[in-house]
Length: 410
Image (cartoon, rainbow, N blue to C red; front, top):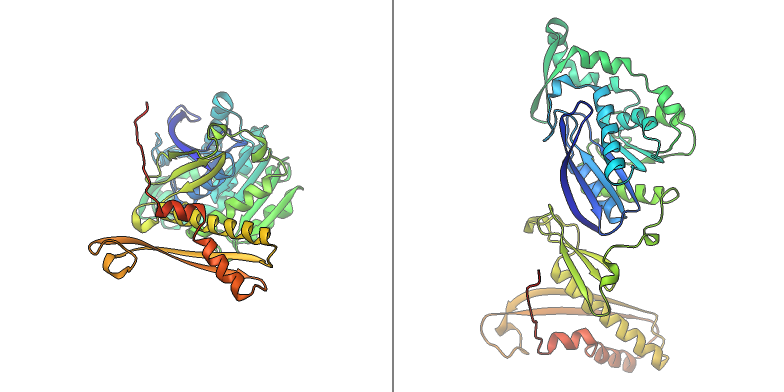
């Protein structure tokens, strides 16, 4: 599970301070990665955040940063170009190398994908390059600058509007993107390459992915993103990319279970540690007896929906305990119970609507539990198993008098 998300700054290629964020796993990372965002975007664009956080859940720490002149970084965007983006990427890798560990994975979205392909040879420790909706040549972005072309030809500078923001583009930017020919860099990449691209991408056409794939040498893979848009605006598409990427990189990176997770051995039997995830408002990391979980609230409740809500975890506990108790009992009796499925719902209801309640005013908690018993059980066996379900330890705890003792430490 991801741990705290750390914000900081590091010097870019010309000394300007670049705003960065490091999404870390809850413990020692199996590897570090650098994420390069798309043209005129920032490190906080939704897809970058979702991919980085999901990779952190898989044990990979991801550094995402704002290129010079973008987001919260210093500098003027109009003075930057593709070459400066590449140098900023190399500076990010240098920062990791000097302060933590050199990145093993480079990830680039859109023009950021072209940038990681160009920068990869300057980061020898990187084993893997991943591109998402990347153009095969940086000059591909020229079509986004059509509205400014006349001003650039006449005055050497023009304004473009992207995503509701206005950016100044100088002639040197156009000269620079045309000067970069990527085929040689791709052919001599010397890294494992995985290409993510949607056939329905209307910003960077799928033919770019074909060219990158055909030019690159093995090992390489192409992953179709089916009906995703260029920005991976659907949360499910961004999570899909990060999950597939984490699985794909497993051949080249240590497995998460081979790296000791800090604090995992600090929770013994019956102990749980819950740690707030910095920068994610309501999200919390959970270590329960060495196992990792996450809690959050839905987006309509102010959370990020990165894990079940607390009541969802409570219902999960009751459901799991019910299933385990029934399995142990049925096996002991040698009954033909093949499988248990438990569905639970929680709601607040008026006490008067619950005959079993000792209160006749206000609201009470009601949990509905549906238990499906699969297998050739007779009626008596099924009836007895329902009785046993009501005796599972968590069920008993919920019906018992419970005392919670709280104290402040530190």
